Image 1 (spheres, one colour):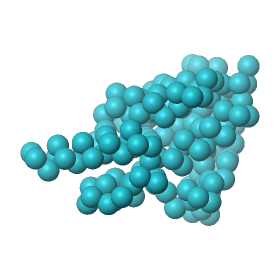
Image 2 (tube, helix red, strand yellow; image 1 turned 90 degrees about the vertical axis):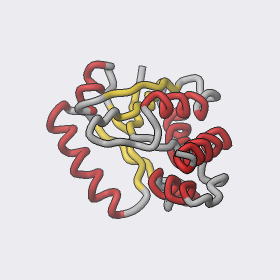
Image 3 (tube, rainbow, N blue to C red; image 1 turned 120 degrees about the horizontal axis):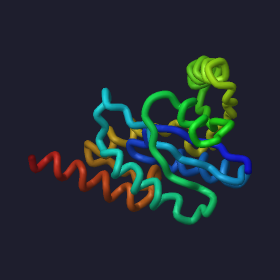
Length: 162
């Protein structure tokens, strides 16, 4: 079985993430969308919320599994029999950053990194940009699923009423 992992913080999951996961799902037997648990970084959404959003957004993809990890991604790969990492490239600056990580992951554990170019429709898209737009009441309906959009509205409404 050919298994790959699509790792990320997914804070929140965007249409760009879903596009990459879906494209990978057409190429591989199983795709694991794995949420990084970083105790040093406080996100807008909890890990549990991120996992729920990913499950909702990928429910139509039968060969996609949702998981979480902390520590080194290569350890997660080794522990779960995953031989490759899928990473999205939106720009040249992404490539510079991702190449260093890919080379280190290969050196540490022999895990390959496969780069998938972002759909031009989503090449500008990032979770941090979505959060910023949503925080100020902007329209993110073309950037995330309706469920994620509602979660963003609820999250910022809760913050405003605190």
